[in-house]
Every structure is written in C-alpha cells, then in structure tokens.
Image 1 (spheres, rainbow, N blue to C red):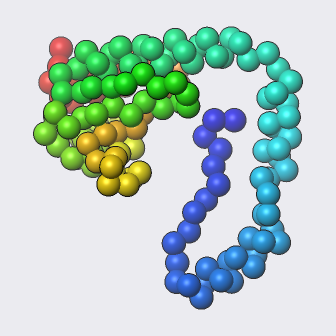
Image 2 (tube, rainbow, N blue to C red):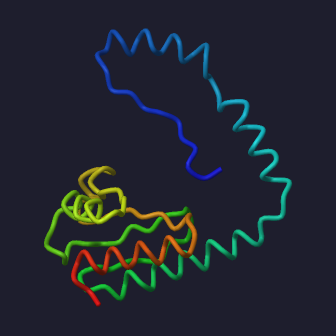
Length: 145
C-alpha cells in the first residue's frame, strides 16, 4: 500500500468552506478500498518484505554515505532516507533539479519546512536494480566515481 495518499488543497477561504461541506459527506474516513486493502495486508506474512526493505534501506544508506558531500542517518522506520546535502553547496531544490535533469526524482527537503533545507528525501521502496541506478545517477551528478 506504499504511496497511497490523501490530498491537500490551498484555495480561497470561501472555496475551502464549500469544499469542507463536500469533504464531510463524501470522505469522512479512509476510502473503503484502502480499508479493505489494509485488512488484507494484516492477514499476510510480510516477514520477507520487512527483511527486503531493511536490506534496501541499508544499501542506499551505505552508498549515500560513500558520496562526498552527503551525510545520511539510518532511519528506524518509514520508507525514506533524508540525507544531509549541505556540503554539496547547493540548496535542496538545486540538488533535486540537478538529479531530475539526470533522470532521478527526489523530494527537496525544504518541502517539509525551513528546517528541511539542506536535505533531500529518497524512498527505498523500489527494486534493488532501481536503487543501484539511483546511486549511479547521484554519483554521476556530483562527479563521484
């Protein structure tokens, strides 16, 4: 179920008030299909995926810490790493833009508020093959060998 989201809207107050009326009647709780998926998810043995995600997290963490200018802490949960990229001398947005130009999408840390500036967010909820490609792109973008 990773990646399923609930949306957010920024709009004029009068429009938000009308939207609140719709939201209250249309989606006062998590969608039924997501609830059904969650019930099924709790019924299966996920020990393989727990180990697989731990392996992917460790791989990406190890590789990011081998790149000059990037410092990454090992998270205890979630599907994301939030490496510090301040030593690269670029803003979070500049780093994200450079990576995007080379085919890798990351989230600039400033999207999470001013304290997130100097960080990027990457997910390790992907195949090892794609994580290896991501590391190669990051290294190539910042002239690492």
